Amino acid sequence: MKALKLTKIAAVVLLASTTLTACNNATESDTAKENITKESPSTLKNESATNQPELLPGFENRLNIYKEVTLTADLSHLSANQKQMLALLIDASKIMDDLFWQQAYSQDKKSFLASISDETVRRFAEINYGPWDRLDGDKVFLTQATKKAHGAEFYPADMTKAEFEQSDFSDKMGLYSVVKRDDEEKLMSISYSEIYHDQMNRAAAILDKAAKFADDKEFSNYLTMRAQALRTDEYQASDFAWMDMKNNPIDVVIGPIENYEDQLYGYRAAFESYVLIKDLAWSEKLAKYAQFLPELQKGLPVAKKYKAEVPGSDADLNAYDVIYYAGHSNAGSKTIAINLPNDEEVQLKKGTRRLQLKNAMRAKFDAIMLPIADELIVPEQRKNVTFTGFFANTMFHEVAHGLGIKNTLNGQGPVRQALKEHASALEEGKADILGLYMIRQLLDKGAITDGTLEDYYTTFMAGIFRSIRFGASSAHGKANMVRFNYFQENGAFSRNEQGLYSINIDKMTAAIDSLSQLILTLQGNGDYQGVDSLVKESGVIGETLAADLARLEAASIPVDIVFKQGKKVLGL
Image 1 (tube, rainbow, N blue to C red):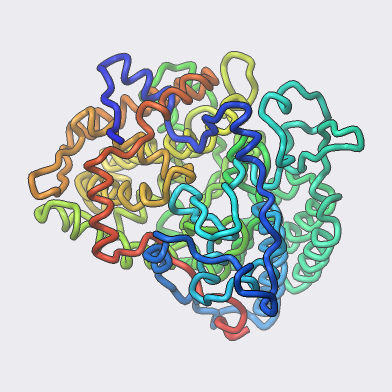
Image 2 (cartoon, helix red, strand yellow):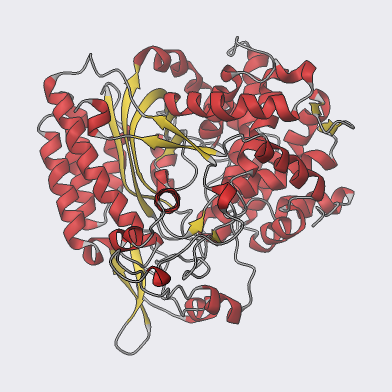
């Protein structure tokens, strides 16, 4: 399918109005059908092999798209108490992993995996947290499985969007509840702390125990408050406590956090966890950038009313080595940077913390970014694809989440609620574009002294190819498709007869500014239809790009990484 051409002004408005999403374009009846995920129960190993799920034809080459990386870090500077605490944090993280399986897939994890006889196929299912290829539009790759529900397990399988929107019940758009049917078949919500009661309480008890081993008082306080949040579904106080931590060498991000798994509405948060070791030397280098946020907000290329919000001045940037991933963060593509909390009130009062996961980032750069550059970038610009550029683009993407607008200007409430299932993808697109805007501004101010604008732009272009391979079901992948087509229409890059891409610095700069204006306007207006149109018109992969991506596959370049991790790997 060819990417649709956009006409000048109409295209720009349309383009922006539909950006980056994991949307549900089905009719009401289609939605109901797609939400039904009643697979035949997986059989145990001792049952007939004919009833076991098998790999569907055409997926043989997908089984090797992940490169395994051992997740380690230097723990020699940590105390005995801190190492004991790390072991407990990993134990709590494993519970988050089990909870995410329940949110993603209705079938029991152990019986499902045990039913797959082929070890390689079983590992692929484990990486994807179910029978759907998360880096290929959630395509079903096993027999006896049906299409992944847009609402995962957050909503009843037979619920339509019309039924949901016409229903009135408590916590309808809640972050921390599951929608079920009551005895009269009417929709209702059940809080996470109730429906996952046993697991939440076990995780909370482990965090309470870990707090006793924490040498840093602020971190101990955060762990205690986070434990209480798991028991009560009240997370804001612990988010504020997390923002107040400055000196702890260990960190953990744990609980129901991101909304990407809920592709039906983007309301419900999925469980995940990261256990982290702070890189003090790198963090010190990054600390200076947060002070520029208020100034950069004022300079955004958009009308004043769309940048009137003042980002929190207490934000900070730090680099970490990650030693454990669990749940949503570990499913399919692996996160390499974190920008939290998501709570809009906390963001406006305190800002956010941006955590760069340096060891995971380096693994992706070496295994994926450099080979992509060799395959798709013109020889004279390949030297401009640098780890400094990759690290900075990733970091300022996360910083840029703090810029722009969090609440609509026309009374529709937070942007997250107004744009529904499109909110996450549009926000990711905003962060990518404004991250480049920030880098350009900081280079001009002399605040960034490493690298050139050409380095950052060329590295960003190689990064688009990397992220597009995550597929349409990914908010990041969808955002990159829209941006690729927008850049192409505006001449930000060109492609020669050999299929190699080169960057036009001036036109890239102009495209960044115009797309920034478009996205911020869509968010401020809460323009759901505009974003929906943008995705339909330009969130597609054209024939030429599809052929270029196939070249990456033919060259056996990994799509992403997967981890060998855990207490044994770390010597704990």
